[in-house]
Image 1: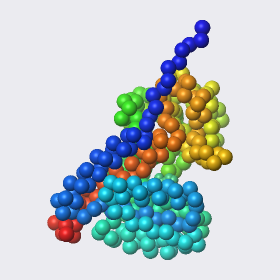
Image 2: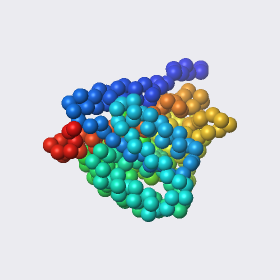
Image 3: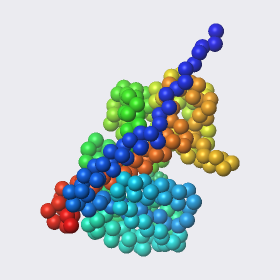
Image 4: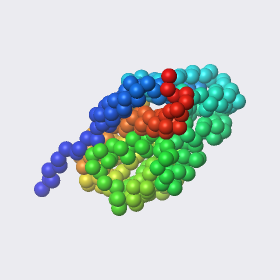
Length: 298
Ligand code: GUN
């Protein structure tokens, strides 16, 4: 007899983001009503990559809606490393800047490593500086967790998806998502497997997952036969195929097997931006305490 499948729970990152951003908006309003300046986020985009332009615009708009002052720097595609380092040095020293975000990827003439190292760790709201990556390894709460891993953790926790002792399989070992996410899931006491381009039998690993998270950018990499019945599936991919936005997961088919799944769009994407806003306010709170007797108050 054919087994009757119920619809999976949709992990709605858009709805959760609305709720969390409203909470942030109210918190910021309490500070500004008391006479403190707004939180400030500097967003730096080098060049004119269309996808990056969309992401940066989303981040700037999200800031405005919650009351974070965003300072947007558009630099020419031919900018050299030294010029970008000069901009970062100025932003490091500015009292009204709590967070600095340099959108990745950078044009190839720029030394990305030097740029990441130049951002002051206490303003590194992307969490890419090795001091913050190190704090993630060491499970130190005062570091910044990269925005997408942070957003996924908030989403799973909101929907009551437990991680302790669970088999979490991550597909993709990139610097922005897969790698830091694996450390965060380990922090949450999951048993973590990281698959990547050199993994020999991907399906063998994905089939063992209680929670399967894909962050590769390969459209529809994850098929129905790669997912265990009842698994929770998180799709971090955003690709454009024939003018449509699609994820790493073949959603329509995989949803028949999953107990819970994130949509694309409206799943992880908005949660990444929410993670950025939370990190910026985290930095602001800390800097407010440090500076509240001097330059913060008007
Ligand atoms: N490019 C893709 N994702 C990100 C991100 O989270 N932060 C930055 N700075 N660049 C990105």
